[in-house]
Amino acid sequence: MIKIKTKQLQSLLSKLNVAVEKTAFKPSSGWVHINIDTNGKILLQVSNFDYYVEASFEAESESNEALIATVEAETFIPLVSKLTKEYLNVRIDDNGKALILSTDSNLYTFPLQINQSTGEVAEVPAINFDAIHYSIDEIPGKCIASITNINAKGFSDDSKLKKAYQSFVYVDNVGAVTFTGPIYINDFHYESVDEEEGFKILLNEGQSKLLSIFGDEEKVFVEVERTSDDNAKRKARFLGANMRITYIVQPNSLTNEFPAEKIRNIVSSDTHVVVDREEFIKALARLMVFDKKFNSTVMDYSKIEWKEKECKLVSVKSKNFEVIPYINAENAFEHESIIRFADLIGILKVFTSKEIDMSYGSSPAITINAEEFKQLVPEVVKR
Image: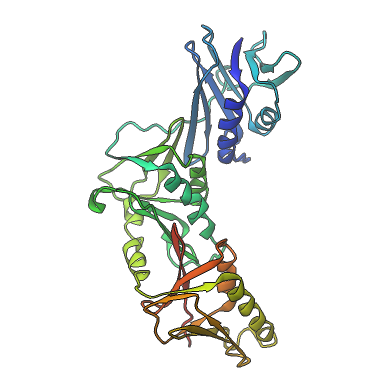
């Protein structure tokens, strides 16, 4: 019988749960594999088609016992999350068919998943990472997790995306960029290596959401496999203090198509205007009341007339307008941005700050500047 600290197991399983995605096509993606060696090291594993996640920690005390079990995550993880005892005991039943968790007053049984061909405990498919061709160390966990918190929010259900790379988050040693409808530009803000020596990969929606498992204060190592075949998929690995994610990522041929540098250059602007977020949103909403009376296929846009000390929000359809004074302005000048107010409201509601810093004029988009990232609101091209 092996003794485990309950909170340690709960903490790691709550992170692993993000990676559990049971499907009829791949039942093993709904399993948790548990491997405990005779030194008390515990390894938890979850996998899917294009990722493999490991979590490790130490048992509360050494026991010369080893244990291998694979169980259904949909019952195992919720049950463990509800345990209140400080410690729990883990063992395999006498028939070798179930995993048993017990405390001094509880006992729970979980059937083992068995490989029907061998009769042994089933394993979750690992993604082997034999050769490291590039590595970068100590990216702050806060930066890595921000890919989930910022870039993954930009995914769209729009099937009209024109380019294949728009279905991914672009990640390199500088930051991350999402170009899936909304454009999110996330800067890691840390001392990185020269960009030419860095890595670049594409992560799909499911892969990018896993990066939330890393803590803000931990350091994350990134390893990327290089290949001489630009059309072959590669592997990338993110390693934290006790969590590891291995991905199968897109080939260089697609990754190199992503216009990351071009997008980053778009947001370079010396112009900044700061407005009260709530006041700005409410003004937009009031003008949209009039817009709804018009056919949405006719002049489906409105405009912002930027001035040196204020901006004028104009409903092109109704000719109504509101004037919003700037709280602060830097290098403001007169300019007109044609834009859909509904798009702008939707984006502004994501922000929580009292004030919003916006840039304009250097590109066909309005840039909303936050501390950790920038988001572009494309201007409308009138036809």
